[in-house]
Image 1 (tube, rainbow, N blue to C red):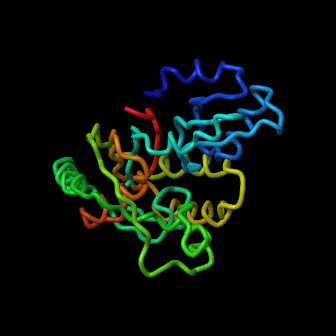
Image 2 (image 1 turned 60 degrees about the vertical axis):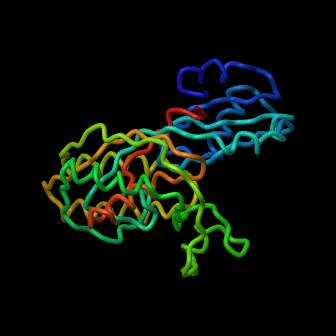
Length: 258
């Protein structure tokens, strides 16, 4: 099991051929994480580094980095189960299924805890999940996120077999829209690379201006899933089951392996 408790131990190793459990910060891309790791451990460009499993820019938590000869073992680590704590924001949907996206739908929504639990009990039965439109899954040799930006998304999305081993609703909270949006804008502005940040921030600012002093519902969950299950997709599926727009407000990967 690779968890937050042994992150420091892995990160302190100076072995150029190793497997490291590293904590990715919210707003940090995997490319920036690799560069930071290389700098912190004085690894030159001649030392190859790869990651076993992706984590979205807005998410934080554990990522496996393989260095040197251990890069050849990447496939051995890709199938590990993963545990997350994540928050679902109800009332807003985006084209990326998280806060780093353009708003596509809004509708005031405050489902009760029992409704949320019932909806996820049905979702838990699923064994096949569609990839989100903004993901790295290739279609015709081109990642889905590039299709999404170009407006050439396929009519039928590729799917992956997966399983929700467990999911627990920890709590729900009514929070000010202003607080929720402004905290996410701060993270979005930290993201480096071409993620449409300017357009996305403008969209959230407009939403915030229109929302004024309104409140929103945020539900917090802990889940353990098989490899390949996108937490963003779970958030959207939950919204669909409840007849409300929803997105992944925050995602933290807390454990890799079982």
